[in-house]
Image (cartoon, rainbow, N blue to C red):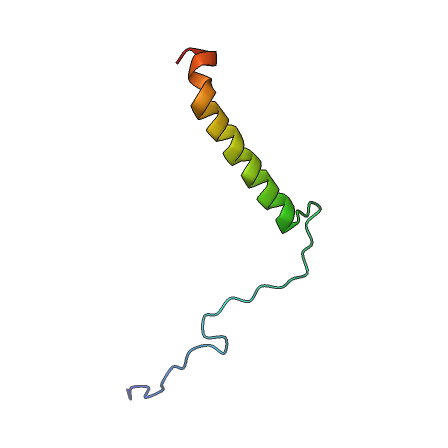
Length: 58
């Protein structure tokens, strides 16, 4: 039997996965709201690190 001398080429997409923007989430958060939330969390953490030990007795 003769050996196949065929060269296998990669598929047309080359292993690249395509994602489509058809999906819309029901919850959309603006970047400004995220920044405000982060700043609030930082302020709360600083406040608790400063005064939390006396309040909670840790």
